[in-house]
Image (cartoon, rainbow over all chains, first blue to last red; front, side, top):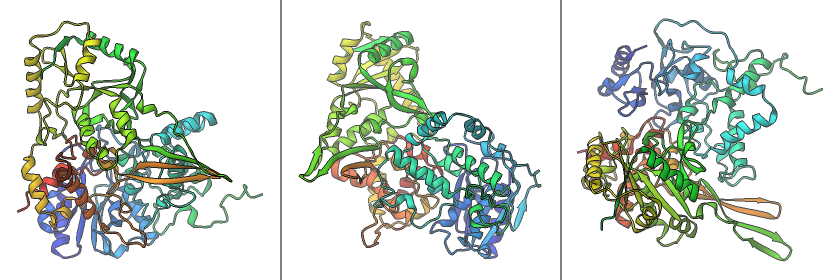
Length: 283
Length: 345
């Protein structure tokens, strides 16, 4: 999977036709193996761009920052990234007409160790679902299967499950990198930053960390696209996907096999009402 | 002043460590979620004093924990009563094994600010009661640039004892402070090595040659100071996502926030990490924010590390460990940022 040449050509064309103000892509990392996101403002810088199986970061995260706000943006999206983009468009966070989207038919990205990334092994949509231009040949779409770790965890006793999550939460340093790296987290003031509210404060006690991470994961329930930007960002290497995959499984099973962002104009599971929604918990 | 050097082999070193762990409260790098963190250990098998630098977190939490209760109180009809502090677990007499020299240097740097206008008693007690046994890195990491900064890596007194693995496979133990010298006298039964100093020098030369990143510190610091209004700050950090990991895991970042928690009649005041990369760091009552965009926050971070702290305390705040770049999800390295700004014509 190497689209460096095509992407450089497209970016050059977009700048010369004056279709975009900024291009969000990947450049080579001088220190490690994974490619680094880069923002490019002119055709002169296009030679920096590259794209291969090590380009794992979800670039739609950059649509919330000042460098791209209210500008015409060109960007690269893989299957999971395009699902996030679909949701951002649906949630009125970006205007589709301001974007020039290069979709990738993704064959899976590799992590820092060179192994295929965890989310790619269970990816349901490797091909970009929203794009202006599609690169690569479409990959087979896979059927949804719940995450093996989540199923394994769900089979354990309440105490064992509590202990697993307590270990995760007690290792959290509350830097909030998970939230900042998440493309779906764009609130101007996040509820977990409300330092003076009765519910949250800035201290890093176990109840606080638990509260913050659980609230965060619930706000992403039915919206998480499993790009795992949060895990890539977490300096403590916490397995945050356990929270999201658990939510994803519950939502898939209970809300008409909902998978976030696959269909255009499809809001998250909690934003639409259907007569088939489960109501057995009411009566 | 030069101290006695002791020589030992791999088994002898393991015995030396095992003795220390048996006799003292000991902290060492322990594997936790695929990286090493400094934790209390009860046997050598649980830890790895030779943990690779790229996978080892800083030991800052042993002196400045991620969260600490600094005040507890109780309210009643008679008034407010302060509840005395419980015994500080981190202030007990202890030994830390396997410390990287940059991490030890970071404490020397922090001493300046913690013993400045306000004397942090908690920090002082933790610092005084800690003996640091450092393991010299065999090879520089891809992000390391400690040898380019304003301190002497080879003859630093930031740590008490230095363990060096020489090219011949033997280990040489050298004290760098009086405290370390006394400790070694007490804890090693091995013969002194006469040729130790050459072996240690040899190892250092090989280590110093393995650095990929080098810069002219004086020049960069001076140039940076003149470049406050440079647009390069914006160019160098445009892909930052303001996620704060750099400052949370930095061994010398020391900003904190205070939060009050009150449940019924009991209250606790907490001190926890904060970061100048967060948009809320400088947000004032009334809504004004002097650093509303990320390049201004990054400028503050870079200038504090390389200019302001040096002006005030005459030491550089950055110790060149590269931990910020390792943890950064988009691999922005402060080395690149300061060099890019300083080298801009």
